[in-house]
Length: 160
Image (cartoon, rainbow, N blue to C red; front, side, top):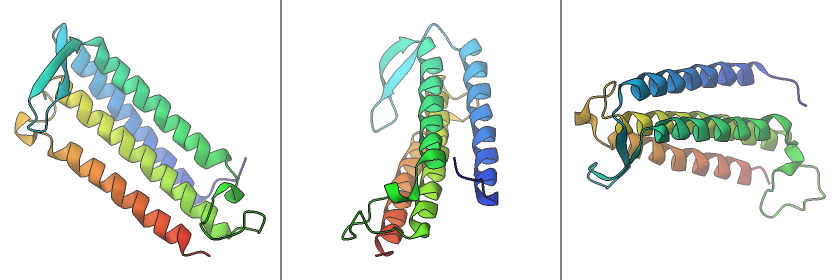
């Protein structure tokens, strides 16, 4: 296991706070939610499929497990596990490749948890997020995900 840097600790604290927020919102929404809640939305933000309210708990659980899995990769994977296109895998990798990969994992875990919060709020009918918000927070988070992946892939590729 690698030693934690200050940057890692800051990310872990932020992720723990967002994870607690996810579960607080999920439990609060679950208690108020009717027996059936919307579980799928079209692009206009209209619910087009209903399901049991326990699905809200499942969404939070899947988000939690996925975020913890992403963080485990960041914590225990060696820098040499980063494949840089055009660089011989037997050659020693730049230490920055590991730093960039770790940052990418931290940001992906945070974005995933924020996305799960949006999904739970949509499912519960928006008691904490006004309905007028619609799907735009979800689209923003998904767009940020692609930007973050692209940014760090380019930074890692430039290490050749």
